[in-house]
Amino acid sequence: DIEIMLDAAGVGLGVKFWDLGNGLGDVIFRAAARGADVVGWETDDAIFNDSCKIRDELKRYPKLANAGIDIRHKSYLEEGLGIEECDVLYWYYNQNSYDGGLKNEEKLQLRLSKGKFKPGTKLIVYGGERWYGFRLIKEELDAVTLGYRMYELGSFENATNAGYLGESSHASWAHVKDVGSGENYHPVDMIMPDENKADKFLINTLRRDAVETETGMVVE
Image (tube, rainbow, N blue to C red; front, side, top):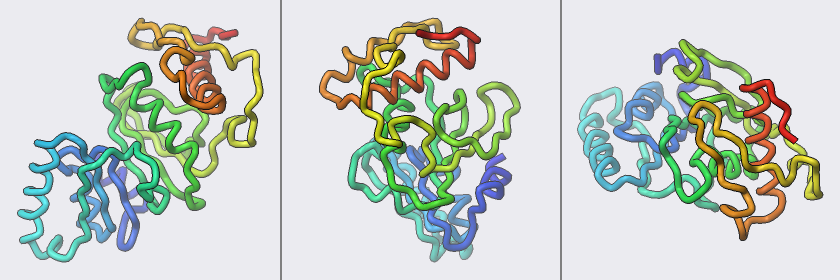
């Protein structure tokens, strides 16, 4: 339930709540009704236009008349957009979202792992598998991929956060079965040829940890 999830994240008056891919606004409008300052990000032209129309209609009601609801027609993966200013981030997992070789969740993990977030900043991911490397603080699941997990940002638990840029027995690992789909990942060197060594190491580590945890196999 969205309201229970927002309660758990402490979303209320004055909280800066950002929805990364807000769709038609199911979550951001509920957060705004609680008094949160809301920012939604949506790249799809039609959905962006529809969500803005719905917002304008809802602002006719007293509870949302003065609500701060900012819907932006940009990708939340871009740098320099002030994403670190928020108190709570929300992302609805889409398992079919691919762009090139990296999944959207992997690109988002890279983006968030580099951010300088305030202590206590929360990330809510609805659906999908657990994100390894981010400190899990709460999960409410009806099934393996149905429900949400809440993480604390600014506490990335990975060697790259400590400045590790060297080689590792796992640093070249990149080609394993995608857990749950049976598909193969592309080698990171192939899909990230121009990225730095730290980014490649991070993606390799996240993929390795996920596979080892879900399958019980040790990936060398």
